[in-house]
Image (tube, rainbow, N blue to C red; front, side):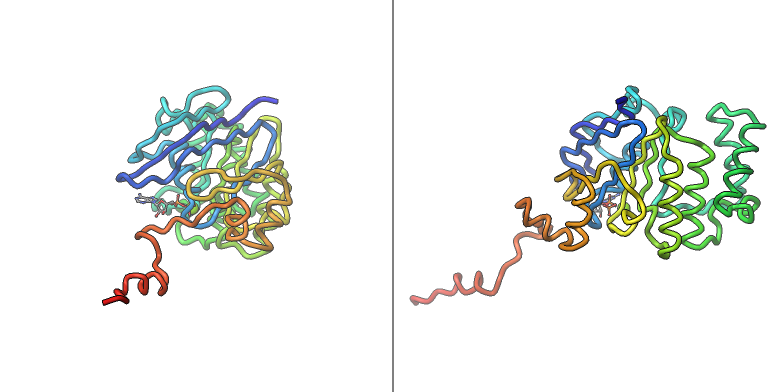
Length: 267
Ligand code: ADP
Ligand code: MG
């Protein structure tokens, strides 16, 4: 079992605000892992730091197929086979999707014939034909943008794909379609990390492992029973089971009773 992605003891801060704290994850080739976590737990930050967005104070290590990621720039990480699909895909006015894909494929060393053939096949498969000659993500609906992200992944065939909230903003049919596409792309040369705060997509996808992320670290890992627990009790129930206190940003919450203890009764 070869390790595709290895992340050890990752700590990330921005402007002295700690976002990830002791985050570790190992994903073997051929597997699909899900990271579930409430809003604000640091899921997108994890993706941004891995792909090389600047501005973070980073400690810890991350490697792709044994190559250290943090010593490489964004383009080098992509060339190694790292792909992030964005929670909020950016509109790129003036750059057509077709040209964008050809350019990206060339960067990866694909010849023009192979790149054109993949674009043809995958655009057909994901119904992206009408978007190929439009600007990247320009005026696409939320669902179309997410479909475009999956299409790009299918063309570029990364080694490690980080799919950040690929299911958010999608109607239920589209969630099912995306989940099926991810299952169909399973391969011994690919590791997928599906990031979500809903368990909905996991009804149509069978991840090899589910990790729960709270307050910047993985707090529990397991199989489908973990998704079921979250579906029935939410993150609060999991916090209670694991004894994780909710972090309150602006000092401790004071109950009415706390104020009464300050009342000087004996004066
Ligand atoms: P998630 O994707 O799990 O919802 P994020 O990684 O987007 O969480 O954010 C985690 C926390 O870090 C949030 O509290 C968010 O407000 C904060 N955060 C993210 N980016 C920045 C930034 N550039 N500056 C300050 N705080 C940030
Ligand atoms: Mg996010």
